[in-house]
Length: 114
Image (cartoon, rainbow, N blue to C red; front, side, top):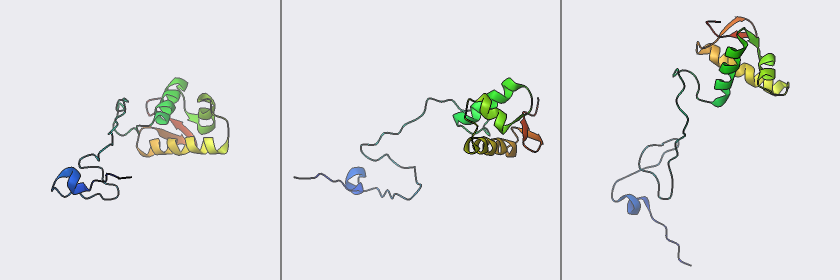
């Protein structure tokens, strides 16, 4: 059985392409496909681009009032378990630290214009 292995010099010519941990620039490796998501960027660049944050912001807008993490879990149809409420609470705190939400009282989260 003969295996066809190509070195980087054979693949890319004489150019020196070194791969470093966390390095994503440079030409793609043979046989790899660069994938892009069809999702659009959030309205504000400081909003994390994860569906959970979009769902949280939508649920807060629908509520129209300040809401607690536990109540938000119910609104998102998540089981009321510590792992879910703490996960939602940490996301809410992250949104507060970025200035997207406010925390008028400890544990109570709202949109700044609500």
